[in-house]
Length: 209
Image (cartoon, rainbow, N blue to C red):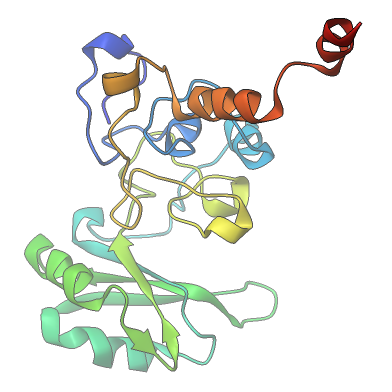
């Protein structure tokens, strides 16, 4: 999506986030919400985050691999991803205290085409019995990026009630306002709930008197 500073009427709609990471926007199914709808988004808005300065390499050539089984090793990752191009660097992220894998990794290729090919072929593949998530590395590319642990990130599962949109895994849906005149999905849901619940209890009592 374009910068949130632009008037909404001038923004060009896109299925994906572009350039700037806005927590409220990625928390919206169509990117149109203007207020946070869950506590994690509030946490993301109020948090300060700087990308790890120790991370080297070209972010455009780097892929993110998530939902890894903790038994997966760096050697396994290199073996699984080597067929898509020349691996410049592979990093299996571990916990600073325990030294145990944290379930995600980064791989840098020599070219962007190789990285995109790996994303296309490996997303959804199972390694050690667990389906993995493969996408571009966004941390060093999006201004204002907030990781999952701070309420941001991308993707997520419905049962966690912390869905994030605007990425390859969960792109934005076309805004409802284009066909219904409703300003956002949140406003649409509020109207639906109001219809189901009916008028407030006080109004019902006055009507029955």
